[in-house]
Image (cartoon, rainbow, N blue to C red; front, top):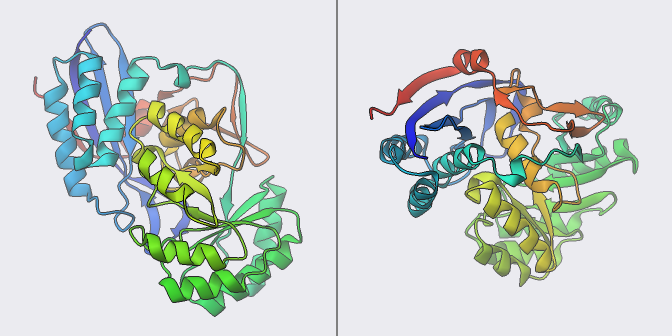
Length: 357
């Protein structure tokens, strides 16, 4: 069985409301979408969202590699293609992951084909910035069934501490809180913020300092009143092992786009716990395709709220049938195995490329 066609698309997926991070505000997601077909009628798809500012990867570089891979894979078996993609993943982890997961879909990988129903709790961000708006938003999120809320910090230490306190007051012990600085603090700011936190209802503090600044993140972990979670630095098994050696780091967050495919992601989620930490999973900037695949990996590995909630941010998703949501949970009905809605795919395509062979 060999690959006889590769198709690529650049997509624009509008969001219900702007999604604010410390380094950028998103009004839409812009993933690359990959499709492969074989001479025996197998079909696979995957996607990956390179978000400028979150890493050194660029959309231009990812799109270039995608086209190179698209041409090279035609004529290869799925096994040959998988090995070739892995050999080039350092050039763009996100683009390579889109191809690697498309191979898994075409291969009917066990992790993507489990017929049992699934119900996983999800995290949701608190977007309100003004004090008077916080209580109403918190009540609305609790009414939807969410029991883990994320608070973005990293702009101003004192203002962030005040906002966290207001949200703690509004939550009143009814939900767990995760704080995320998205690498925005320097060492002094991170230590000042983390050491001043009232730990009430706070599960963890995520990524205070730069991804490559292990020393500053370690310094913050030592003085923090709550456990620390590393996100952007965690891209390999070696990174997991390095995090486990740091005092105060109790969580590692993994994302499919940094761990190549569902197989390797699943293995590394298990490795986090084997090293004495808890894994957290999910790309809040991922499409519903990414949310589905990450949830498949989380089925038997993750014991806390998933961050694979990108599908809830989209005005329209790509999967058919769509990913379900019920009372704060992502839900798979028994036998759930989605396809891609072709009409939705066409509506959201801004550029289309197809292999020439």
